[in-house]
Length: 187
Image (cartoon, rainbow, N blue to C red; front, side):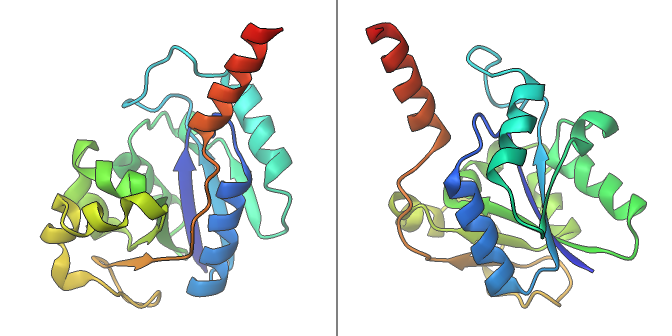
């Protein structure tokens, strides 16, 4: 079974997560997408992070699709790092193949991730455009290091990555949080 993995804080989950998931299913022929809600992203501050249960419930509310599962696997595994989570998933589900799905903003940040080069050896990576990030990421460290592995086929073995320019989706969790804070201070 070919499974897409979309991890993140989902602080909050929004229609952009759903949009990328639906595009990934269509373009990659995925059977399912698993949204892995992180208890705490090691690269993000705890301040301003909604409680885990609230983020998990919010993701379930947005994800309402029969092929999208919202899971607390990282909390159960105790794995805050994508590398460790992918290793555990591959061990626990040997009959499944996983593709890591991310926005271009996360792809640009990959060199800050723990064992980021090894992530490419665990699962192919599908990167989805967030418009403004397109030119810089194509010359960034991950794109350069793995330039010979671009344009993988979903059935190929890792390493491999592909970039999808799917159009601009202006919504972001950061903008949602800023709007909420602004409306609270104005009340």
